[in-house]
Image (tube, rainbow, N blue to C red; front, side, top):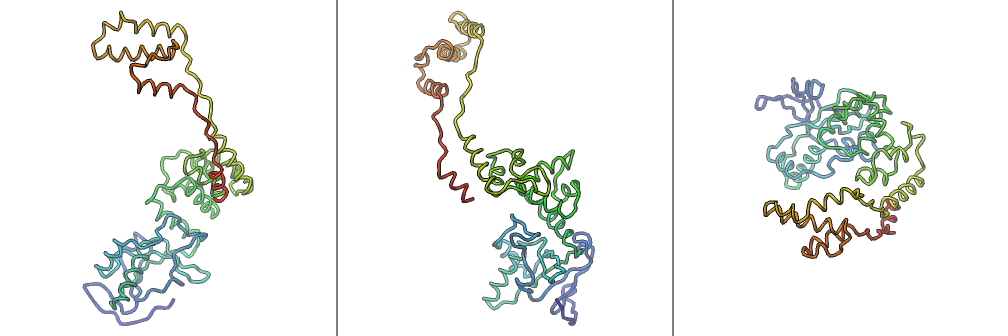
Length: 337
């Protein structure tokens, strides 16, 4: 993309160019690993300057898709972008892909849409080029710049780990890029999550929402890092349905077995003679305990009749739960997912 060579003027102590300009200084060298940034008088347009879409190696599933109205208001009032948008130039077609600053790009485009409608001067677009032309470096940069602002789900970690490993990064490099700290064994941590990258969306969602543990992802995605041992999509979905149905089925609640000698000591401990020696407030509590012991260990159904709400609570707890059938609609929803 060619830039005009035009006259440079001085304004407010900064270098300003009619068309495009360069800003230099330690601010850009340290933060972006480049020596200059470029201000464009005109937006190159969505055909050249693009936010990575789903399926692109630089796509960020948690990035904003609409302009932040507060940011729009701030940029419009200031009349300039204070922070640039960092872009990577695709060597194959010269497309400028956004690495960092999606919110700012969406906001400044909305500002300029409003300004164009009102006949006002547009805000200049402020871009910083990523130093490397290598795709693997751009992927690394995007992860570093965006991961610190979120708490990723297990499936997000898995997909990003797989993408980084495919591009040759070590396990330690991956954890550094993804801002993961306090892990003793990077490879063990990563290999536990990688199988989830090879799971169908329904399985990923089940792990993310805690319906099944992360450790079970290996049963679906297999134990091979490249996904060659994964189950087929339909097989994964069927296995997930069976697993969720099994987990939803009512399970027998094991009764708490208290040795008879302990029951006898408890009954003796709450006899009238010993309870009468307690403080008044403790005697009231002891009376409830004695009735509870009589109900649970003595088989006296009406022992808690003096306390109807408590009796109802206890009876509900000791009764077997009603069966909870799996709704057909729930299984159909998994099919659709």
